[in-house]
Every structure is written in C-alpha cells, then in structure tokens.
Image (cartoon, rainbow, N blue to C red; front, side, top):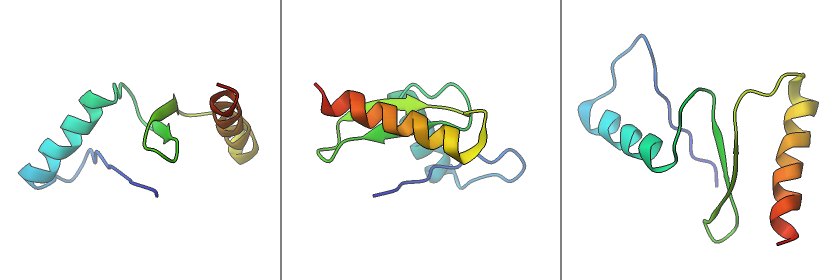
Length: 73
C-alpha cells in the first residue's frame, strides 16, 4: 500500500489534514523532503530515505538495499 503525505508550501491544507500530517511527521521523525518511509508487510518500519542523487536507478538500488537488509534479519 502506498500512502502519500504532502506538505505544500504555497497552498494551505485544511486544519484537520495539517494536524494529521504533522503527527505523522513527528511519529516517523521526518526532517526533510522528500522522505520515503519503507515498511514490511506487517507494518513495521524497516527503513527511510530521502532524495537520492542519480535518478531512478540509484533510488531503486537504495530501496533494494533496505529490503535486502530487512530480509536478512
């Protein structure tokens, strides 16, 4: 499942949505954007990454490293 949480800089969000997003950011220690939090099938956080220089191939490589590290535990 994919969940996208947006923190727009130019348009305000409804107060309830803003509060929900801020709660998630605090819960998952989001300090910058973009941030991708990766979970396993049970919903346990297994990794987190931000902007990855080098395009899609480099990003996919980082995601694969997170999932591989998690599967060896």
